[in-house]
Length: 276
Image 1 (cartoon, rainbow, N blue to C red):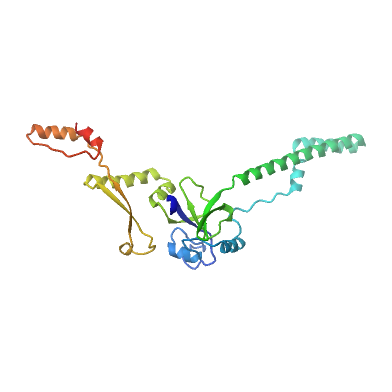
Image 2 (cartoon, one colour; image 1 turned 120 degrees about the vertical axis):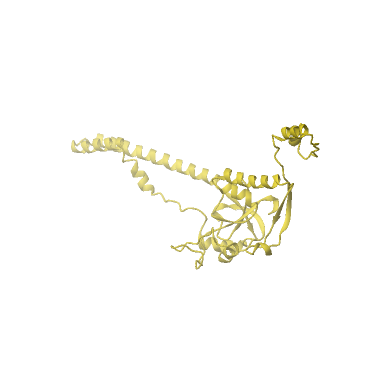
């Protein structure tokens, strides 16, 4: 994608679940082919239009977990249900029994005052947390009407195509669409170091055979056999043959045996250092 970013397609449950489902009827988005996923979500690589996105917001709702509603009356009453309040309530009951109405009124006033102060502090703290969460709400770069725009992550809908770069917060359940596949796999894999070493060992194997270049090609054909893909060269990388630390000893032994040794090097300074 433009700017070297990676594009993904957000995946939520569409209405059609005839294929690629498990035993409980849930779509297995990790195994469904890309073109089939596009068809099920009625979208394309260019994303959705604003009108279609608004329709899906109305159908699916916002992209966020349902918020738990707080019963304010129960919050207020909770401040009358603690050891201090229990002691005051017992004292109030004893005042009634002893017909000491002045003490009863004073205790009742203090009990209500304590509950009101605690309730107001709780509400203010909740409002402060809500305001902070609103400021920290994640955003997403999404394709709408063919252009990339920034929207709040809770406005994402099934079928949206978004762009995610390294370090971004993943704002929804996604299916890979296109991008730097090797880096994406490494970022997602819990055992990334082992996978990275496997890739590097494979490259080192080619380098040890004398290969000095690694071609990188890209294909956008989708679900077609490899032989039919329309490959496009996107990069050519030099390979580094790691220096062998026994090279200098090997050269010396060859000279001692009367074998003339001539070595053409210069592609890597490290190799020249090892042979000196």
